[in-house]
Image (cartoon, rainbow, N blue to C red; front, top):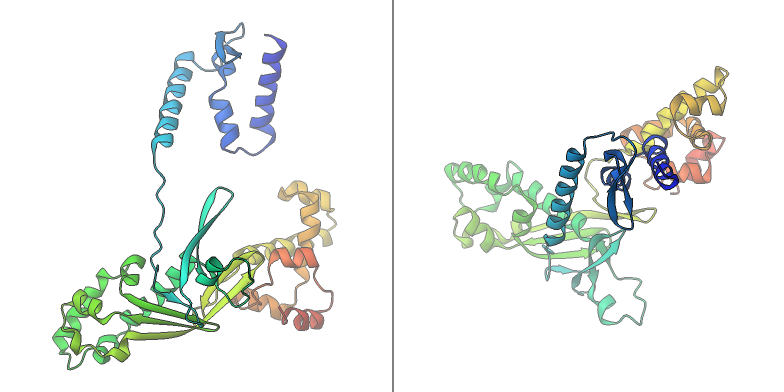
Length: 335
């Protein structure tokens, strides 16, 4: 076997044994003719002088499948998610929110932005909105779903509704479970700091349930809810204020690890020994173990998902955990 061939095989062994697999590693292994007793030179594959690890016929079939998949992938057109609320969103100034998008790490990210950001790019607009589209659509669909699925929803919504009509409509609600179907009922959405208002098109409701639109109370077509936009690092999250708290499972898991590692340290283990036993790096153990010193009241809040939104594992590792519990309560409450 030549020097280059041996180097390639050693590199393949390091890739397969020394580091976690990713798609590039797997593709390199699957397309490497070394394993079939062959060598590649200047783009061509030749028979080698070393024994094959796998049958050359199997390797050939794998190459055919990979080529077929690559051709199919190149020919396939990527599906884009349409903006479900285009033309229906307005901010507190009356400005329409326009669909927009950006790309990050090759992924297409959709937004709804105040039109003035598009119309006049030369000026700053500190009061303009730029909201993640999928989150906003899900939030509005959730608000509509809650309204439609209340037990008393149609008793007050439809004038002079009979018991039979109410029972029939309640059974038909099963057809309005998807996000797109719920948003199809929307006529207009008004967003302002702290609140979101959704106007339902009563003609759409009437058509959906086979009712006369005049029997539907217009007041019941107006939905209103507290609304929050929170930042966690560079990530933006939208919330209805009366939604159940969301538990930060990464923070919970890291606190549990930190408590276990602190117990091991008290038993005489070093950071290096913990790293070998638990499989993180030594530096990661040193960074995370301080989370074991979080105040007990904050631990209760973390377990319920009620801690300050910006209080994350990354924040605590970067800033360091304050040594005194009373300081933790006062400082972290400001986040």
